[in-house]
Length: 472
Ligand code: ADP
Image (cartoon, rainbow, N blue to C red; front, side, top):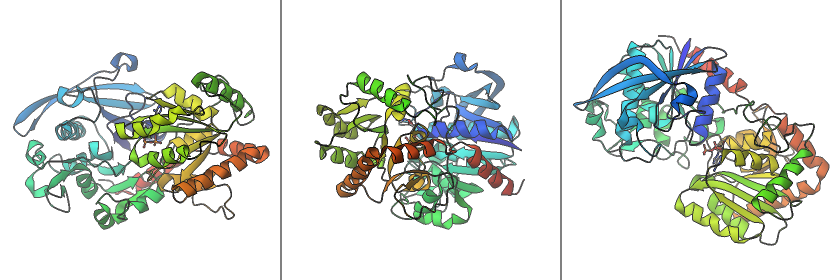
C-alpha cells in the first residue's frame, strides 16, 4: 500500500504550528510500515540546499479559469519518506504562509497539482489530506481526475475551513454543479473543507473527544449539522509526538538533560532558565505557557487569573506570539517581577521552558488535540488543562478517585471544567499543594515521563482505517 500525505506544512521543512509536527511525525512512523509519500508546496522559505531538494523531472501545466499555470515538481528523500514539492510562484512566493488574499487560488493550484501528480506520475492507494489547504483534492480526485485511490481527510482544527468568494468556482474549474449545500456551498461562499468532507471516504479528527465535540453547535463552527450527516465516516485518532525529537535526555537545547531517573536535574535547569530570563526566587514553582497567543488558547482567562494572584509566591513564563489583541493582554503582565512574557517564536527556548517548568498551563477554549501538553509531560512539567478535546483525552486529574480513562496512555495533571477565575484559582491551589508534597509531585513527574505519547499507537489506528477502506 502506498500512502500520500498531502499538507501545507510538515516538520522539518516548514512549520507554523502543530500541523507540521503532526504530519512530519505521522509520515516518519508510517513509513516503517507502508510506502509513504508526502506532498507539500515548495514555499520560498524552504531551504532546498539543506534538505537536498532537487527537480523530480516532472513538469506539467494546469489550465484554471482560462489561465495557464506551469507547475514544476521537486523532491527529496529523508528518513524513509519520499517528499514531493509542488512549485508555482503563485502558490509559493509569499512572505506569509497563510495570511494572503489569494489563498483560494494558491491552494486551488496545490490541490489540482496534487491530483495531476497522482493521476499521471505516481501510484498511490491512499490520498491522505490534511486540513482545508489540501481538502479540495477530495472532490477533484473524483472529477475531473478520477483517481483510483481512497481519500482520507484529517481535520486538525475546524476553526479554519478555507472559505472564499464563490468566484473560486470558475477560477478553479470546480463546476457550478458542485456549488450545493451538501458539497462546496457555505452561506453563498465556497468552503474547501466542506467540499473535502463531502467527498472523502473517511474523515478523522485528531482526538476522540474532538470528533464528538465538532458535531455540537458549541464547537461546530456552523458545520455541526453537516458533520452529523457524515458521522458514519467520522472518527478520532489522537496525535502522537516524536519521541526521539522531544526527549529531555538528549535535547541539545537543555543545559541539564535528564531522564526519569534523574529528575533532580530539572531543578538545575530551572535555576539556569530563571537566571537567563531574569526571574528571581527560582525555588518558587514555575508555571509556563508556550503557544499561540490566540482566542482559542484561553489567553484572556489566563491573563485575568495572573493579574489577580499578584501576591502568590510563584514564577510565570509565557512564550508565544499571536494577534495584537492577545499580545497586548499579556505584555502588561511583564510589569510584575515574577512574570516574564517573551513574544516571538523560539524553538530552543520552548524546550528549555518545558524542561524547567513545574506546571504547564493550557486553559484552551477548545483543543482538537494539543501537542504542548504531551511535550510538557515528556519533560516532567505537570499540565493544568481545561477538559476539552485532546486535553481531555490525554490528561487525567491526579485527584480523580476513579481514574478510569479510555486512553491507556493518558498522563496525570490538573483538569478544569471551566477557566473562570474561581476554577482557575482552584487549580492553582491544587498545584501549590502538589508542589509542597515533594514525593507525590516527583512520582507524577516520573509516571508522566514514562508514558508512551509516540506515533506508534496512532499509526496502528491509521493503518486499521486505511485497510478498512475498500481498495479501488
Ligand atoms: P497549535 O494549536 O498551535 O497547533 P499545539 O499544542 O498542537 O498547538 O502545537 C503547538 C506546537 O508549536 C508545540 O510544539 C509548541 O511547543 C510549538 N510552539 C507554539 N508557539 C511557540 C513559540 N512561540 N515558540 C516555540 N514553540 C512554539
